[in-house]
Length: 248
Image (tube, rainbow, N blue to C red):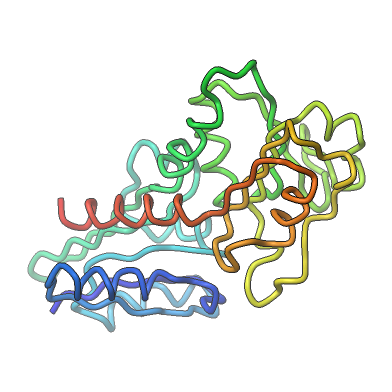
């Protein structure tokens, strides 16, 4: 039986195991999907060594970037993005080849397109600077959408801290994307520190989080009349793209 799985820490928020387990039952696929919480990315080689039936992995926070040095090869898109969320494990005799891919970007791009049809040029605020954020940046560049990055410190060139996000910035950036884990289960009462009173019905709020289905961030946007979208559609698209890679 082939084994697939998810690495990251924590993993309590993830629906990946349920998604793939249900898929395997529904489609009569002789495989299993397991969760592998790693306290450190340094434990990754031992995981590969000790699980000989492991065929493919998904990668979630906080290892989408730090996993890169442990891979034998990274595909072109993932290399440009600078983050990996899917690993294909090729085993031949006594050799193992680990190939990194990124299916987050394509999943996010597909979710964004319906919001951009017949609209004037728009600018986006991206909250968070981790691996998921890198995929969002890549997708927005492909879509021709300008963006401003927001991080906790705002120390890097071109980034703002949350304290620097003024009412004017909120009003001129009609797409606000939360790529950070703020508000993710079990921390469901948290939300990014923004001036929500300046969000209006012209805004689009997108949260990459899918657990809970409606985060505080999205609830605040909905109260202001904004369009909102959670991360479930993106999750499903990237999951199916991962499955295609593992079986190519």
